[in-house]
Every structure is written in C-alpha cells, then in structure tokens.
View: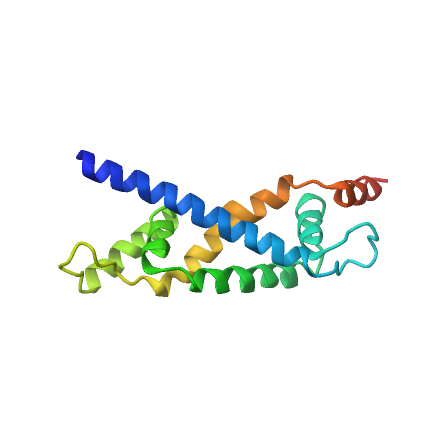
Length: 156
C-alpha cells in the first residue's frame, strides 16, 4: 500500500472514530433527558440508566423498546451525516465491506476523486455498528450512583 493510501486510511479511521463517539455521546445525552421507565427500580433516573442497567444485569421483555429508542436516535443522527462522514464509518465495518464493494461495482464511480460516492442506503449498517461498538459497549461499563445502587439492590 502506498503512503497516500495509508494516510487516507488513517484519516478515515480517525474521522470515523470521532463521528461514532460524537453520535454515541449525543445519543446518551438524549436518553438522559427522558425519565426512567423501569418503575420497579426506583434509583434509576433516566432511560440511559435503564439501558445500562438492562445491559449490565438483565434484559427485560421491554428491551426491544429501549433498543428501538436507541435505533431511532442513532438513525436520525446518521441521516444528518455528510456522505464522506458516512463513508468513513462504513469503511470501518467489517460486515459491510463486502456489501460496499458489491455496491461500488454496480454504481457509477465519480471520475473526480474529490467527489464522494453516495452510500446513504447503508445508513442501517452504520447505525447498528455505532450502537453495537460505541453505545452498547459503553452501556456495559457505564457507572453512576443511581446505577450502582440499582445493580447492588438487584443482587440481593
């Protein structure tokens, strides 16, 4: 791989990381603005706490509703990405790389190297990737006073 490609790949990876972290943080902040829905665990304050609790302890029958709330926030943020931002994230997703290559074969690739290819039909892959790698991994290790109390109480 020549130096130009190595630099471009490195820039893409760093850009992707920043974009994913930003979307994860914005999602967490939005979920923190919604009051907790788990009535039987009084110490939880917001839906972000609920998501973390569910990930760390047990996923209830209501998990699909939490997952759908996260999907809806992430998808709206992903839809707002510029093509080059979406493409940077897409390049980091191992599952999507084959799909992207197939898509490229069937698309007219711009002859101008400064023009980006539109992969907006892959927003689903990008959203799920961000959820899995950035949001739910963060939920697995997140801790605050109310969450620690809820986890501790559920152990007895």
